[in-house]
Amino acid sequence: MKNSLFIPNILPSEHVFGHLARTILLNGVIDKHNVQSTLSGESRALIAKPTYQPFMGPLVNELAEHFELEVESIYLKHSMLGFYRHPMDCGKLTQVLQNKIRKDIYSPGAISFNTAKWRFCTDCISQDRDQYGTAYWHVEHQLPTALTCHVHENVLLLSECDNCESDIKDLREHPVPVSRCKKCDGIHLSKKMELNSTQKWIQDAGLELFRDDSTFVDSQYKYAVTYELPYRFRYMHGVNGRNNIFVCEEVQKIFYSWLMDHQLDLFFSNEIAIESLKAARIDRISFYPLAAPIVLHILWLRFLGAQSIKEAFCDVSSANVA
Image (tube, rainbow, N blue to C red; front, side, top):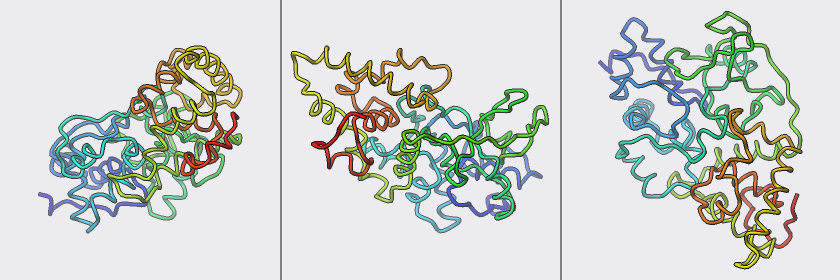
């Protein structure tokens, strides 16, 4: 049956789930569940929340063979693993490449940030249609560090309809982003948001991680988004066994104020009270750095004066609290 399917070209940074949804749409004469099962072995909802789902393996392998691409390059540029892989265990990433993972992989903090709904840019819809003949789901728009479009400066990413507040969770029902809400037919209006310097730094740091071209298994940013933060914090604040609790509490208060002053609460889910988020506590991150979301590492590194993610560990001595 695979030979009878029409497989469209995979577009730049198109999410593999978005490509699968478009393939289902373009083969509409065939039952969509059969198309999905043929390509991936399963017919599961195409949701944004998990970093990796087991049926991605057969799907990515099929795309790699069809388009003569490297499996590694598809995961890097067409899935959220391009962003989330950096602190992940090398053995698990190797298993991903070998299609040996049998359970969904969720990144730490999946419910804490804007990662449960598919997001889109209204200007990209028009531009993509003009350039490629169709709009499509960009991986960059789904990054937890993204507030505005990476292509159209200051255009706010949307995740729900202004009129009826409906959102997009399963791409099988929304194979491509559209200009009008499918539920109420309201128009998705373009919104502008000028990022402040700190918000832009966070957003650019996320893009830097996603666009990293080091090998899939061995990321050059692994140290920067894991152990650099605890080291930098202890170095800058002279933390030791005796003053650990006092220093952590004082700096934590300043950090929370800094988040609000720079409007960084926009990166968090609306349902989350940041002060109650245990994963955001520096004492917890210091002991369990791998359990903390990448976004929190980025936020804390910026707070502690890091000039870039790539060079975060190179200039500790001259770092100053923002």
